[in-house]
Amino acid sequence: MKFTVPIIIFGVLVVFLGIGLRLDPRLLPSPLIDRTAPEFHLSQLDEPSRTFSPTELRGQVWLLNTWASWCVSCRQEHPLLLALARSGTVPIYGLNYKDNRSDALQWLKNMGNPYVINVQDSNGRVGMDYGVYGVPETYLIDKTGVIRFKQIGPLNVETLEKTVMPLVRSLNS
Amino acid sequence: MKSAVLLLTLLTPSGNDPALDQRVLALSRQLRCLVCQNESLADSQAELASDLRKEIRQQMVQGKNEEEIKAFLTARYGDFVLYRPPLTPRTYLLWFAPFGVAAVGLYAFIRIVRTQRSTTFSGKDHERVETILTNGVGTNIAIYREQMEFLKNEFETGSFTREQFEIERNELEQRLLEECGGPL
Image (cartoon, rainbow over all chains, first blue to last red; front, top):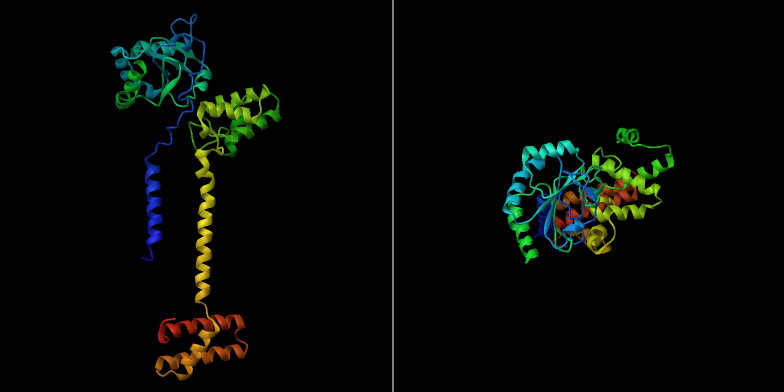
């Protein structure tokens, strides 16, 4: 009885520590969720003379995937993006982040190209507007141009099936 | 840390405005690098940190103040970039919990001191001890009687100060009461 209070306090501390250990400190809530996707005009990777801007996709649900040829996790994610592109459920646009154009083109040639359009963010300034801090990062943008979901790090089958696809379906309906 | 700052000053294109350098450095120290989360933007060697330092510098050149630059960064990366989180309903717990914990500690401390004080000896206890020592019989009480004589003697001859004597006597009396005096 004498130790009831210390044991309760200890129990609470253990629970807090347990929760803390299970959280991933790299996963930060993005302040951009439910905000309009930042505007940009960047030249396209295939044809640098042409530009692309997110406003062109108003009325569509689409994914913006940031990637780079130097990014190791992007390789891991890539087959999933290719499969997603093949399924035709949601178009994927690419933001080629702080990359070298020829490296990026070579990479797509080797690995396959799931992107409808890729844009070059050579100095990472647009990435900064999107709060990118660890490529790959993927944004789901709705018909009104609002970011509805952000994946930090490579997409995986589970998030895609449990979160992204249901969201895409409800946003499209 | 020091070498990191030195390296930073070597790596950052500095122009020749040491006052601006200082301002960039001072602000970067208050901001967290999102890539290496244990480092500030000033210390981190991550590429993003260097980009952000350049951005801060550029915005300072454009005449933006610290608050505007912080707002720029939190709009993109969240409050997490700030080492000192803002006071919002979401952070009330973070800001006020330490005071709550301190209050609980103070309350516990006061309670412990009060209980201890109430178990310290009153004049009535001394009387009870005297009665036991004078009227009691048995080997234990005889030993206590001897010890008490010894303490008094030490005090009278000046080997103990009053304070020492009282501490020793209280301890002895407490033991005596616990052993022979029944419940307090």
